[in-house]
Length: 316
Image 1 (cartoon, one colour):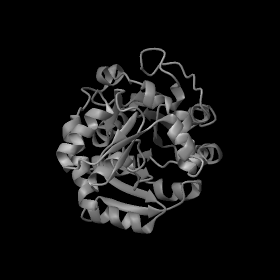
Image 2 (cartoon, helix red, strand yellow):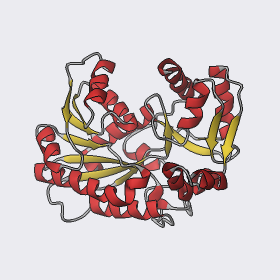
Image 3 (cartoon, one colour):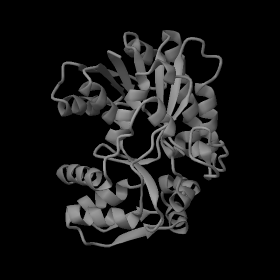
Image 4 (cartoon, one colour):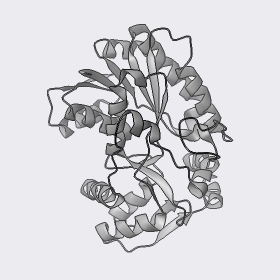
């Protein structure tokens, strides 16, 4: 791979994929709708000559075609808000796949684990798709659209991430906790503090995603992007206190608490149905990646949280 475009390049996963591609000497086009955010991305990378950007609308396939016509691989990192998923996710999928198909390009779709529902078996790529939530069922439709036989020229793959964290993270479950601690404020924690859960460090995820994308035989498949293991909320807070010195209270939000907050906040209202993941967890299996790609990068939680919190403190 010598050239790539990253759709949604200023988002959490988009930024780390841009960085990973540039670190390999790959020419990158950052695609987004915000001039100011794209300008900031250029500054972040010291106006690297291998990085350019294109303004466009992810829902307008023609703007994607115009921006991506000379690249080898499209990385689809754009997303829709939880409260807009029902109305917009399939439109997004249709747009990016239509563009990839017309151009005859490889396309990497970054997605999550809602398609699986409750964990009932080993968490590999063959885990049953038995979603019990609205978002999970929509994500199954989204997967079916990506791998639809109507696309004759596009080559797609899907990478599936658990919850994540990292210096560029924006909308993860951990974000309000880490932002509050970095700002030396009282913070919230979404879910049970005692439940061990899987989180992937975004720079590790980007390394795995690009490794997968570089293999021709990876396309047409789902790929898990596992984290470095599991960790409880209590353990995360202990590390965060060591980094920030913040000793202020952390308030765990249960499903009922979030349901009440959701009466006044549409985003929190949408979180209620996926709270099962904070109670039960879901552990992704990385054997397929290890067998066909290589060792899984595993930044320790201590190091990853330190780098994330240091960035947040600097921003604040």
